[in-house]
Length: 321
Ligand SMILES: [Zn+2]
Image (tube, rainbow, N blue to C red; front, side, top):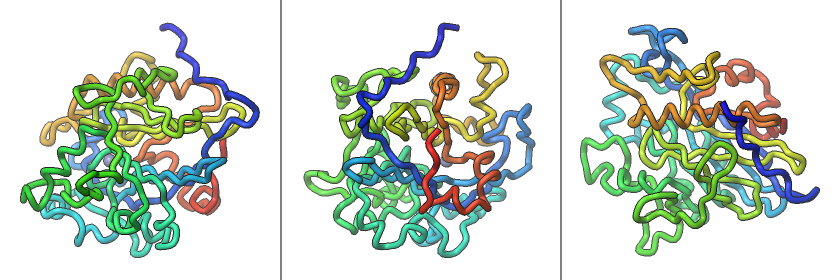
């Protein structure tokens, strides 16, 4: 295999970067065969409890705040569409979030009102939390994959069966608080996207090399990841959203073998299995580079190691590698 393309070096000793903080957006129980290959422990009728992680990034110079994903909301019974509520009644789908411990409650009203950008990797129920306080703060700009917009536009209650709420975003006549991004297609902005490391399409969000939105196809249309510098001297973090639901799927012993599980009743958790495998290969490449920390939304291994370590969670900073 050719060597992985490197990530760009810092532009100077004062290269801007982002401080990263991890927030716990509850846990969910799902069928293990949906997200784990049999060789990784996926067992029929065996539920799997996985964490939902959210990340707050703060720009080192401007102090702009950028929140990536919200996990599940403790108020899911009020703010999730009936179709999701119905799903939660089918074992083993279950939301497990302690009262007062979801992302919104952990941040608190004051911090929520200060959030500049809220980026959703995609619109599945275990990532969107409760966006209402961020809509109501009249400040947060929502950063989303353009292809996911359609799901919200024809979401609940317009479509009674929809799994996505039609009220997730601050729609307005000019949609000035919605940044819908797409590197390809009729509405894409290809001129602003460029390759970075192993990824063909990335957007330099703050235009100073501190944070990139990465096009991460496969899980669902418009699925996006984040690649951010975590120091002025070469540290990085890659936030993989639902590109994979387990580290094991990315970190295969054989470098070309990526096995995406397919549950015989529910099908594949990724809408485009091939694109998903390709994205996982690219994430593995970036993971192999020095000083790159990779975290996915349902990072069980990280969670198990850190769940009782107070210093690993917001308001404490995630150390840069
Ligand atoms: Zn998920």
